[in-house]
Every structure is written in C-alpha cells, then in structure tokens.
Amino acid sequence: MLATLNSATLQGIDAELVHVEVNTGEAGELKLIVVGLPDTAVKESTDRVFSALGNSGFKKPFSRTTINLAPGDLRKEGPLYDLPIALGVLAATRADGSAKTLRPDAPLDDYLIAGELSLSGATRPIRGALAIARLAKRLGKRGVLLPLQNAPEAALVEGINVHAVDSLDRAFRFLNGEISLPPTPPPDRSPQHDDAIGDFSEIKGQHALRRAVEVAIAGGHNLLMIGPPGSGKSMIAKRIPTIMPAPTLDESLEILGIHSAAGQTISGPVQLGRRPVRSPHHTISDVGLLGGGAIPGPGEISLAHHGILFLDELPEFKRSALEVMRQPLEDGSVTISRSAGKVTLPCAFVLVAAMNPCPCGYLGDPKHECRCAPAQIQRYRSRISGPLLDRIDIHIEAPALSISELRNEAPGEPSSAIRDRVQTARDLQLARFQGTAATANARMTHAQIRKHCAIDSTLGDLLQHAMEQLSLSARAYDRISKVSRTIADLAGSEKIESPHLLEAIQYRSLDRNVFY
Image (cartoon, rainbow, N blue to C red):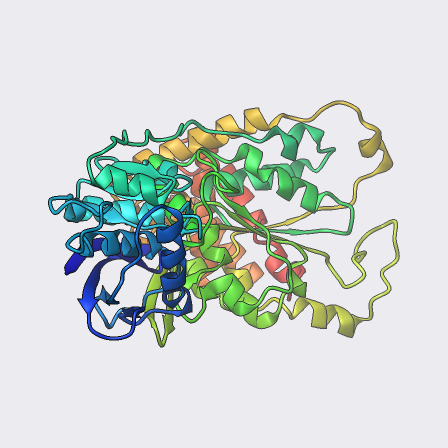
C-alpha cells in the first residue's frame, strides 16, 4: 500500500515542502530503499527506522519498501525524515493484519512532521523547526509534529498548533486518536540580560570610547577601536550586550530562524529577548565567516543578524576573510551560490572590531617605546583595506589608562542608564522608518538620508571642508550623515545641529591619521 505524509527540507533558512511517499508490499528483497536525492544521513535513516519500529513495539515491514522524498530534484539532508518515514511505514502496512497500524482516516495530510529517531524510538532535535512551522502556516496546515526540544521555538509562530512528541509511539497514538497532545505554548519573550558578563559601571575612564560605543549601538553603526594592549577594548566589547536594545518580535523570529537552521535551539545557546553576539577566532575560514558548504548554510555574519559581530585583533584575520564582508556590510544580506543551489541569507549585523596601532601595540603610547620599524607598521595596517575601513562608521582611539584612573574607585555610569538612552533612540528610529525595510539609522537608503539627515548651508560647508581635509569618500559622506542623525536622536533633537555633525566628523578623523 501507498501512504503519503508531509515533511520539509531546509533551503538556507527557509523550508520547502517535501512529500514522504512510502510504498510497501513490493516484490523483491526485504529492505527499505530511499530515493529522492537523499544525502548519507537520510539514507542511514532506514537502519534507524527499523530499530525504532522494533523497539517501540511495532512490526517491521515484511516486504520490499520504497520511500520517495518528492520533489526528486531537491536535495534532502539530515535525519529529520526518520519520524515521517516510520509513520509512513505504519500507515502503508495497515492492510497486512498487524494490530498496531495507523487507521485509514488518520489525519496525515493535516500536519508537517519532522524528527530524528534514536534506536529506542525516542525523538531527537532537528535543525530548522521554526522554518517548518512557518511553512505549515503558509500552507494552511493544522499543525506540526516536532521533537520535544524543538517545540518551544516553533510555538513562536502564531496561528499554528505545535505538538511536541518525545517518541515514535507517542506520535503514532496521537495520529491514531488514542491520546491528545495540547499545543505547546509559546515561551516567554520578555527581554533578558545576563549579569554574568559584567556592567559598564566596572569600566574605568575611557569616556570617549564609552560614548562612541553608545552612539554605535544606538544607530546600528559599525565601530573600530584602536588602542594599545590593556586599554580596555575587549572589556568594553564584552559588555556591549548589556546596553543593546531588546529585539522586536519580528527581529526575534528572524534571529531564531537563522540559529534554528544552524541547529541551535532556544534550549541551548540562543535565548529569546537577546540579540546575538558572535566573536569568531581570527583563524576562521572564509566559508565559516560568510557561510556556505555543499548545501549553503549560515556563517558567522548571518548568525550575528540583528546583533553584534566582534572581531578582536582585526588585522590578524585573513585578508580574504575580511574582504568577503564588504558587500554584506553594505547590503545587510549575502547570496551564496553552490552546485546544490543558491540562497540569500540576512546579515544585518553591527561590526565591532578592535586592533592595536602597530604589531607591538605601543605606537603613540607615552609610557612604552614602540619597537616596530616603519615597514612593519605599514604591512600591519595594510591588512585592512581602504574599502573595508570605509564601511566602518566610527573609528575611535582607546588610549592606555593612567594609574590615577585605575585607582579611581568611583563606579562609572551603569549599563541600565546607557541602555535606556539607546532604547529611546531606537524607538525614535522605528517610528521614523515604519513601513520600510530600515530599522536603524545605519540602514538608511540614499533617499532616507536626504529626507532625515538634511542640514543647512552652514553645516554643509563645514562638512565639505572636513571631507576635503580628510580626503574622505562619498560613502564616508553618507556615513557621517547617518552618525550625525543618531547623535541628534540621542540628544532628542529633531534637526542635526553643529555639535552633532562635529562629533560625527571626529569619528572619521582616524581615516587619514592612522591608516593613510
């Protein structure tokens, strides 16, 4: 007999419908055959399904069985088809006299089903549960059947019933009408803050750097910190999550969708109410940073979507790895083409980078002598190309702290106060860009820049003079305008005033003084 169930396959971070067709009673050698462009993990599902059926108290098929994963030209990967294949076998063998088979009117077509099976018949988590729930809603299905660990993230999709099953037997009895499984309630979406990562009040001095970080996070601007070892660059970067605004519901779903496609669930490192912070090591490959693989999947820049990508010791990264970020930094998305297909992944992240001014780290430090030759310094700085630097909105020096600053026991401004100002500025931007793709000032289009960053002739002359003196590009002109708008938002000003523009210009002064 033939039985058909619905499942899905991941294409990037989205899911596409897969029909699982199981046909039993065929003549030939007793075995399960999987067709439909499966990868190795899918082919191995036959062995897992055989053991899971036997250990769950079901009879194994006594005839040759063919399993077709349609459409046949779409590559299938991963163990998520174990559960639908097992249920399909139980539905297709219901005419052989076995006592435990799915009844003929079981609502198989009402659900999308996915899950890995252990040899005992217990379910294990899969990748892409959120995307599968979205697909079920788009197709008008009644609900989804997913492993217990995946159900909470899928329950974030409104208007679809998510039924958590911890075993093959439980999924069988639910579809057979023997038990009821109440839909999984959505998890708490309230903002969460991790006190273990520290607070800005613990940072001594560095008032200019703290201000630059606040501006960067308030407007979603890229930031480069330059200073000697021990000046507090990494310490400040680790505390940036404590001042980040809470993501909106749509942003949370986008974040979770990417991490779910990468195999991370909200029961693991991904938590609702937090923006992601990724800090890859400088030995990372181009594919690890950009994304890819035989079947294209998200890399670090996509896993940092709507969050922070922190690159410590920026010049130590491979030149090729840094250069692949140029287009994603500009567009907020990356398109990856492979023989298995082409996918476009979102990557609207804030780049926070840190570096020393020279290989030894003490160039310009009044307390330490720099041991680097001019040629060494030039080679070190040339690892960061001008086009990449041009896409970093804010460059700020982080000077070494004096002994008196280190001894100062007075706490600095806490993260909560900074976060309140950042949230207020972000709320203004969300209202300003309502109905458009932009969510922060850094993502403004040229038309939006002309509309929201208009300045009078006096400020225009001031900006033109600065551009000529610093030899800045047209891209830097736009980025100064965006940063000025953010500074005005933090000040609660409807118009960009002279202090706002001057502060934004000073954040570009390192273009020439440090790198050229």
